[in-house]
Image (cartoon, rainbow, N blue to C red; front, side, top):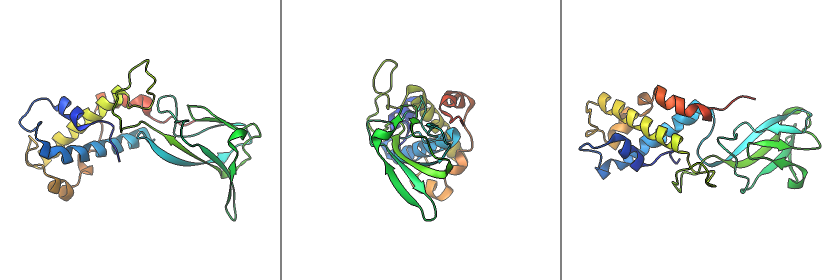
Length: 213
């Protein structure tokens, strides 16, 4: 799993100390970045990192339906493959719906003029969605790089990662992280150090929290 910030971001937030330039700690930083990212996704009740998602939803006898994951802040990538399937039950039989039969918008809204037949989990969508953590171009207002990690999300991940590292090093008996090794992470576990999100970080994450429609 990729993270929402880089090791360099964490070092920038940490500032100067005797361990900040120690590249032997990179594996530890990477583990905590991934753990913080996973916790952010739990907090936001949605995926944030770019991935292929499969979503099942109920038909409602209407022609409009919102997918649960994307919205205008975490958009769907319509340049990638999007497939929509209808599903019959007992036994389950899936039928691919022709792409010409519906429209998909970048906020996850689907228009299906013939109407989504009423049923439970009788439709399936497969789509690519979330922020691309591979290129590491900071998203700036006015640019076309929609899927780069936004600056506020990247900064909040780096901030929370630093907080988590500080908590962990203290619990392991070394306030400067010097004795925190990969072995000690595997022994002690990292979940116990990520027990909450700082208020300043939480305020930056609020716009990414999934709103139940």
